[in-house]
Image 1 (cartoon, rainbow, N blue to C red):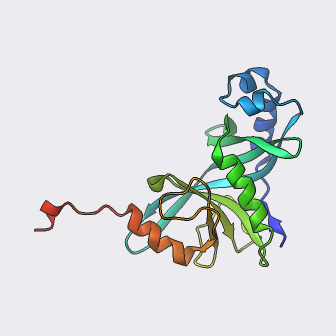
Image 2 (cartoon, rainbow, N blue to C red):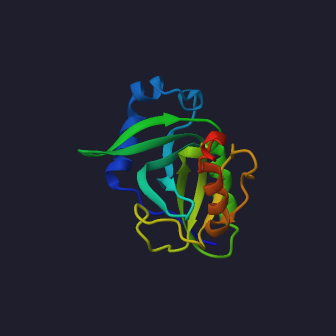
Length: 194
């Protein structure tokens, strides 16, 4: 299946390229893999990062665009990621990082290539569960910076996933959202039940 990656805003890409060209930004980043890379580093696969701010018992959800994430490749593999954020002056480089979400994102994108339907790739963060998912949006022509998860979209939890939610297993939004709703809905205290 052709996986569609929405184009990142040009200023976001320029800010990452400038950071990669800055010895100070690379040297001060907490990314030994990037600092010690022997091959040139380049940004790849820009994904809009949406944050799921609220899930109510009714399932109402609010998402917002938090930034764009680029995998940073050295040769054939991703060694780090770069995050950009929107500032009053436009898109700006935020930081480099490495860790399990880098390789997990790369793995989920490879998995998504084998799905028969075409999807637009995005990331969806669920801060209340410390969870990040690859969001496969069914409308490949949509603006990657806008929109909300649709019932038929797929979410692929990235590793490490919260307990009880399998990483790298695709779920329809309509199936996973009720599980997430139960997880983030506060349980009333016993004293408040009377």
